[in-house]
Length: 195
Image 1 (cartoon, rainbow, N blue to C red):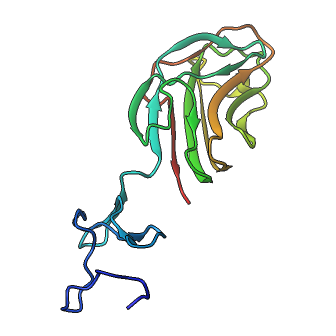
Image 2: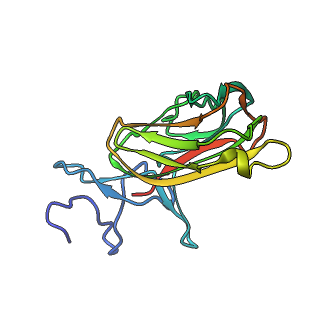
C-alpha cells in the first residue's frame, strides 16, 4: 500500500477509484493531500485499445482560393471546413495553437492549379513559432501535369511550446499572381500531439 493512499482499499485487496470514476479510465494522482486518486480522460478498453478525448488533434479542409501567388507572394492558406477539432486548438481559419509543450505531427497537402512554365520556385511551408519547414520544386512549371496542376505534401514532427502556433503557406515565383488552390477535399491541414 502506498503511504498516504487513504480510502483506496475495499477490504478485498482491490483498489477503489474515485466515486465518479469512468469505466476503463486510467487513474491518476493529483499530487495533493486527501484526494490522491482521480479519474482521467484516458480510456483503455478490455482489448487494450487506448483513447484520450483530451489529446489535441485536428483536421481541416479548404475550399478554392484564387490568384494567391505566382509572383513571389507568400500566401497563408485558409482552412475553413473543420472535420474535427479535438481540444478546440485550431481557430477555424488558418492557425493551430499548441495547448501544451510537446512534439506535434503536422501535415498538409495542396493541389495547385494555373501554374505556368516559367515559374521557377514552388514551396509549401509549415510555419511554426520555432521553425519553418519547407517542401517544393525548383522548377514547378517543368513538372506540372498537362492541366497545369501540381500537388504538394508536407509532414513534420515539430517541437512546439505551449501557445506556439502553426500555419501553412504557399509561394511560387517568376510569374504573375495566377496560381489557384484547387477545389478539392485533398487540400488539408491536420495535426496531433505525439508526446
